[in-house]
Structure formats: C-alpha cells, structure tokens
Image (cartoon, rainbow, N blue to C red; front, side, top):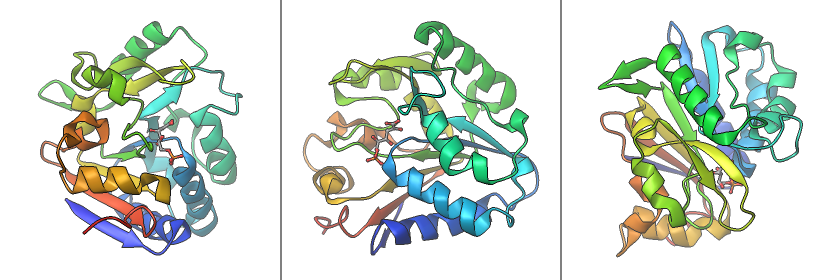
Length: 237
Ligand code: 6PG
C-alpha cells in the first residue's frame, strides 16, 4: 500500500490526473470504476481541462463503483456528475460508458449490472476484474455504497448489491467487496478535515478499524494507493 499526501484537494486532483493519464496509456482496453462524491468532481474537471486532448479516451471503459437509485438527470446521480464534469468536455464513444441505470428497480439493476461486468471484464476466480477502481471514503468510513450499518454487504455473494443510505434511506447499487478487492489497482481519493479521524483509525489500524468498510479494501493481488490532502492526513503519525 502507498499513501500519497498533497497540500490541498487541487494538488490531489492534479497528481491523480497525471497518475491516471499514465495508467491508461498502456495498450488495450482499460476498464475503470468511478466513484461519486466531491473529490472526483474536481478531478474530472482537471482531467478534462488538462488531459482532454492528451488521453485516448476510446480505449477507456467507464463503470461506477456505486450509483444512487435516481434518474440520470437527477442532481444526485453520480453519472450526471460525471457527464457535467468530464464526459461533456471530452470525446468518448457512447458505447464506452456503462452506467448503472439508477432509474430502474434496484434489485433488478444490481443483477443486470453484475451480469454486464461478467460479460465485459476478464474474470479471475469467477470475479470480474477492473483495471482500476476509484473510491472515495465517507466521513463515517463507508466506501462505494457499503456503509458501516450494512457492512455484511461487503461479503455478499452477488457482484453488485443494493444498499441503503443510513440517513436519507436512499437506495444505492454498489460493487461488493470481492469485486473491489479483485481489481488490478484500487485508488482512494480522500480530502478534507472531516475525514481525518477515519483516515487515522483505518490507516493506523486502530482498535475496531475493521468496522469501517473502507478498511476492508485490501486488493488480493493488486495495488492500493491512498491520495490524501493535508487536511485528511492531519492526524496520521
Ligand atoms: C457516493 C460515493 C461515496 C463517496 C464518499 C466520499 O456516490 O456517494 O461513491 O462512496 O465516494 O461518500 O464522498 P466525498 O468525496 O464527497 O467526501
């Protein structure tokens, strides 16, 4: 595991964008699962502005680690956020964008998406393998849409699960732990002082840290990199 710390979220966005540009420059298709949240928003802006014409987007296939069960035009939609901040500014073939259909019945959609992953991705031990899974971490230690109150979903049999946001009750479709940990590479993007306690607990492996889904991200064979800003890393030793 590697921890990279930068001055602020703009620096994180710049560093990750350059890292991503390098990662996707290898030949062949590159399958990436995106996350929602505020940090990716800035990253997508930087990627579009600084790498829009430098990256060959036609080799990249986009998926989501989680999606809110809302329509694709809803402000809550992770897909919409990605359209607004990235896809609307770059040239990417429509058939490379594999969104979770948040407007459909969550259980049926989780099954459809799991099936789509099985078809589109290589499988290792029966588990679809992404080239890269990008994750955020919530203030409560959740990742993708696996929340602490439903941590058992991490170990669910199905590649995709239906989760419920603890406060709003909003349904979400999320990858399970096996798919996340099967990726060739997992990247956490975590910024802001609201994250500093969980960052300390999880990266410091403090007592009880495994209660937090973000602590269960331990790729089987792939690499794990945490991109932090100084606010999020403030309490790390
Ligand atoms: C989502 C997410 C979620 C997010 C974290 C961190 O759709 O809500 O994918 O797991 O990444 O909540 O979000 P922030 O970057 O906004 O703190």
